[in-house]
Amino acid sequence: MKAQKITLKKNLQKMRKNNSIDLSLFLLIAKIGKTRGLNGEFFLRSFAEQNENLFSFKKFFFLNSSVMEELDFEYIKSSNANIIAKIKGFDDIDAIKLFGQKEIFILRSELPELAKNEAYWFELEGMHVMNLEGDSLGKVCGINNYGASDILEVKPKGSSANIILIPYIKNRTVISIDRIKNIILVDWQEDY
Image (cartoon, rainbow, N blue to C red; front, side):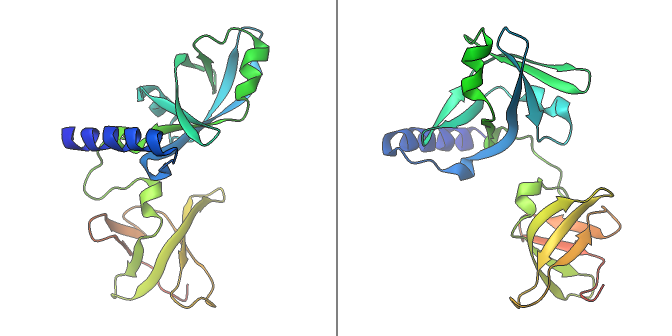
């Protein structure tokens, strides 16, 4: 883990020198919403599975004119079903309006390690999907939720073929995830 942080630090320094941004180092985690009150507070829309997960991260970034800048929050807290936040040094409604609708990122290296048969959603995109019979169904091209459960969108090899939609139900339709081999094993048929 220490070697990974050193490599990440070198990559961030290199990006600052080249004025190029390697977005693969970052993960979109939230978006700044409407202002709240007159003291610089705003609503923060979390993209984490559970809002509380957002509180565990220490460093946040935003894209500012093709440069990734660190964002220093004074606080991030829960208020009813919402998340309220305030940026240090921004104490009135007019100052915070400059940040309206900005996307907030974290470093991917800050994500907690997952168990063997688990993966983050962003890791699933591009994975090969195989069924129990050993047939290749294609690659994951997206993940959506239409209300009932998350859905893997799988693009078959033939470009004219329709997208296969597979419900993401762990241990039922999604049997296993192998991040090393880049394969998702599913109990699903091509013609479902």
